Amino acid sequence: MKAHDLRRWASLTGLVILLSACETPTPPTSEPPPPPPKQVGDPLVIKGRELFFKETFNGNGRTCGTCHREDHNLTIDAAFIATLPKNDPLFVAEFNPALAKNFENPKLMREFGLILENQDGPDTFNMRSVPHVFAQRVSIASNPNNRFHCFSDTQCPRTGWSGDGAPGTQDLKAFATGAVIQHFTKSLNRVAGVDFRLPTEEELITMEAYQLSEGRQEDLQLPLPLKSVVAAKGQEIFNSPTQGKCAFCHFNAGANVGPGSPLGQGNLNFNTGVEDLPDQPEDLAGEPNNKDDGLGTPGDGTFSTPSLVEAADTGPFFHNHSVATIEGAVAFYNGDAFNNSPAGQAIRGGADKAINLDATQVVSVAAFLRVINALHNIDELDDMLGAVARNEYLDGEHPEQVIKRSLNDIDDAIMVLAGGRLHPDAVSDFKETRALVEEAVQYPSRRIKLAARAQTVIARAKSRIVS
Image (cartoon, rainbow, N blue to C red; front, side, top):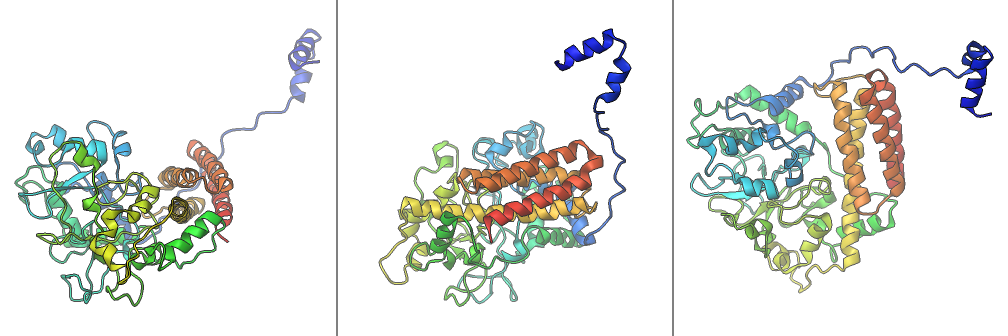
């Protein structure tokens, strides 16, 4: 007898109460709320994070987080920009008449994610993408004795795409000061105390502490015992001094040259010929645009080496978003623009052998970069989900917000792996993790237990990727 027939028969025979008693009760959906989360973390980092994402410095409404979005890998691109409301501070040039001309190029910003910069002074400009601020602790220091000019007698910080993104001492504190003057101003007069206020020394120290806390605190140690045969082959090509030659400038897939390099130590600048690529998207748009001359005023054509660990989910690529995919970025080093550049000539080592990877080799190197990016996502997720499972604030952020933000890293891991047809089993784990996190967002009383379960699932995903 079907259930509805049984129910009808029971009602006719006076057995409704008996039948109801036999049905399985629905479990309650409410649980006691979790206890108040614990306040933990470095006070400098907590304060610096708050300033980074909330402080406008009495300017035009922008914060550091206007361009370095916490929910988008501390950067922005055209796809993300398209999701923002019309009154977002990013678009201040479109609704503040004093900034309507020469402060931004709204077309190039919206179509290609490019921001107007005045590195060489107020009378000239170039268009650049927004670099993320992950792993700066291990990505911006350069030995002062290298063959490129340096403005510090202890270390040479390489901030921004050109390595001279900050005035004066060029460190992260100076970078924040320069950002306020460049991007926070109410008018192009840029008068401190009128168009903005300059950060105090205390504020600069705390924001520096926050930025240095983001992402990796040490470099990878390659080779990794990768389980994907394609990614493992890509790692081999990446490290090969005769094939990919990538490790010459990106030792351990980071931002630094390898030890003992005749070029110098730490994070260096190179002219890789990106500016010589034909048919660049922003040029095709027909908008005013200058060739970016890189480091110095006038520039020497060199740009700072970025870390590659975080690359796959922070595209488009290069300082001008000229290449859309990670595979395209790898393939760039096969082309004439790179191989005819000073950097391309230098790594030939006196031999007439340029980088020349076949299509399958390009895919393999890109697969390697996708996999190490997913491992980076897992590390970030482990920090976030671990804090939620312990019911702790993470750098001043409430667990309720941390669990929501973890969805971004989950989606990134799915994107970079599925985009390269890599580790479908791990992709399934990430999807399971996402379902657990969504449930934790919907039901805060279950947040702690669900975060712990999600942390277990991402550990399983990691075991599928690396031994």
